[in-house]
Image (tube, rainbow, N blue to C red):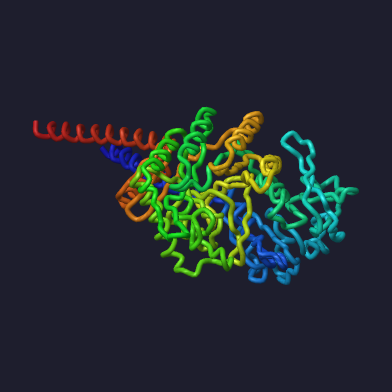
Length: 548
């Protein structure tokens, strides 16, 4: 009898351990996310509004790595020990924190220094052969290998200052070069655990080169499949429905998914009247028809206007004064987003992502949008000082600004620019140096249809994969409305509390009970049940024997 109790007790203990192990595995998965400490001397070049630090911080988000950013002055001695990687951005190169420099010299963590100030780190540092030799400003081209190892040159303009290092080239690997037309210099190199990028740049192909090299810095060998998307821009209730249907039918005939940047309401500057799409049944039927033919709706604001005419004005940025809007931002975004989502859903139109008009919105605006949309499409405004954007070469995940970003980086067809089609493909040649890139361009439906056909035919000749927004998971939430897209299926839930409970339950089973663990648990439960039955049966039998 004692032996049976002991076996049963051991089984219960094993079952408990398995349950605790299952939970702790998920806990470890969260704790095991790699961490980057991003330190900088200042955020902008003098006279420029682009926030270099924000741009690189968000870029690292492609790799699902946690990033902590700090001004180098606030670095605390020993702080480096809590991170896997240290990134240094030098805009002016005036690093005054000697504790930081000393800790960097001692660490075995991966260090990536971008830009100026590196001479302080390399001085009297016997760990590396690299030495600072000066700077140059006459660089005209960047050089980077393609996927098969061939070097490719890109024009980058002039009057940029680059830092030049020299060392024992037998022990140093060069990933990219710059040239003044006569001599080549390293742009990105590595010696031991130290990586160096000779300039912090976000508005040229140099940014894309760094983006690709990050795969090597983070030792990631899975890139995902590169793809391109087509977006029909500024689709509002007064667009020609015949043209919209023609575009959708053409893309569907080519088996090409596409996005619809939808503006649900049109504001007239002459009368001030706002025409909702509910007032135009033919337009609603057209959008629903486009959805059936492979179109995914991206909410492009509510009226694409703050005071100007729809399609021309801003909505989440003060375009007249070139500054963040002065309204209560939380209330403004909540109201405008809500009007747009409600107008769509009541007409069986389901947006899966958001795109700010003209890509213009403040940094706090992005953070507020995260409450309503899992996915953002477009370029990214990376400054509140003035309107300025950055084009990313691949998707970003779980950053300070986004849950998920689908970037736009190829441009668009413009009647004012006869070379705009060629520029789209010039931009593609730059983006395509990045492994696992996501690229996109947009097209207005009122333009000559031959422009779109030309682009599509050239892309088809390149055998590109076209990106389908519906093929990925997205959610949209606003008050009593929840939209969920998963595996190409879109569902709408009117009770957000119920929806969130379902999501939590799904995530619980997905995260805490992988299939193999669940199988083990079932086996243990069966064994426990069998032993319990045997135990009870034996006890009953023994009791019967006692009364005989």
